[in-house]
Image (cartoon, rainbow, N blue to C red; front, side):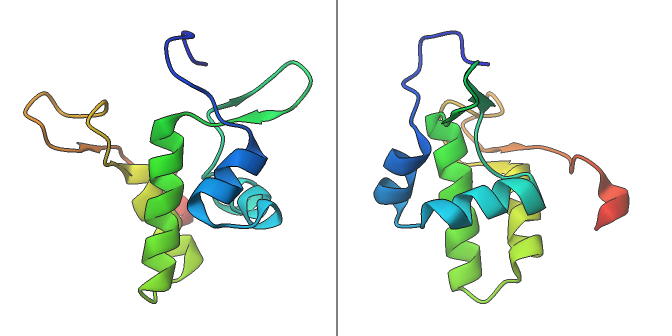
Length: 102
């Protein structure tokens, strides 16, 4: 969950901002684990800037012809924001959540 220092986006704002329909965002969350940073106590999805960067990457990978499942692996592993760097300015590479499912 966010510490309150970062702006949090709702699903509608994310959909409009990155050009992906809200049902698609919900499907990506359910099927591929790419999506909101957390949910409010009322169940509303909330996205950080980093989560939006991951969604943009997934969108772009699909546009380049990658299968959605493969694009999701890339999106979950690479955090392209400057806030998520390895200390040397490069992106943080995260291991897959469960590599046995790929």
